[in-house]
Length: 445
Image (cartoon, rainbow, N blue to C red; front, top):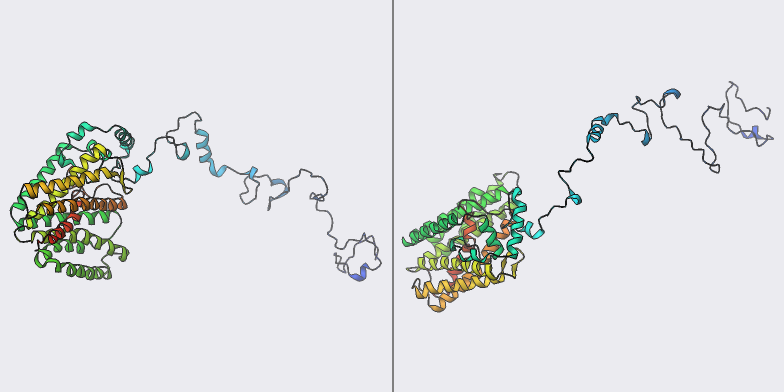
């Protein structure tokens, strides 16, 4: 075998060189013969300078059609991208006028005035109509700097808001409310309450029952609108039964009604009447409704059940709550500066002080000077002070629930006032307090 020729197998093809074949051969003899050159460009050694050539990566094509754009299976470099599949998009881009005015700017390009975090989280004042959002925000800024004292002097007590409301909230509400109609609705409610109280314990119980049931239906509806699936029928039935059972059996009705409500609520979800909703969360909101509205409202039945003086004590509780609202409204509007709670920035410490004074003075005048109810001067002062403290708690509790549900008002049943709960939220907390103050003073049912 010559050193100048590659080893050939018996059938004429190339073969691997064995150790015996290499014996005595020169170093130039190739170990593997790859055959004749294919014509492809040989890549230079890594030490050689760059040639500037681009490797051919188009596979599955002949030499003559490597640049054809019709071959969709071929691989291309990014600069060879075919835009034929995006012709509509490319035409849209080409049709855009570079000098056209931008009608909508998003993100960092949006330089318009935006709602601040306190305004966004304050559901008591939020403007639901997006077309009026900018105007409402401007009005809030203006009234915060220059409160309208003249309108405060002409405001009607029927247009008062809950304890601790300062000038900003009052101005905002007055600006978006028909004040004469709101005053007329307030006077009508007061007249109906006085007529019912004049009928004695039964008449007072009827008006209490109507208010409690309407508030319960309102709250259950608000829960359903916000994704909860409480046992509505069962909850409303418990709210209806609570004042009646309390008037019949007294405080002994509380554990019985609560126990039966829990039992039947569990059966409600076991039977699948709650759908695919989570039973624990919906049992929780069901019991919240029954206790907050049904049980707290049932304390009115305990009050009217007090012999001979029950209706007058309930009237004093209502009068004290109204006095707290009125005092908080005027004092908060005139001098409210220090926020009362981060939950509701529009309620101030000054408004709370005004509400305390208003409640104490109102109850004292009606009970001692007017001779309504069995309280002495000391008892009247105690009742007025307790009412003034718990009424804002009831108002803040409803604000807490409304904020969590993301709503402004619980309902619209009362024109220019909102819902039943929006008018009687503080009263739900006042009723238990007034009952136990009466018990403390020796008046029992």
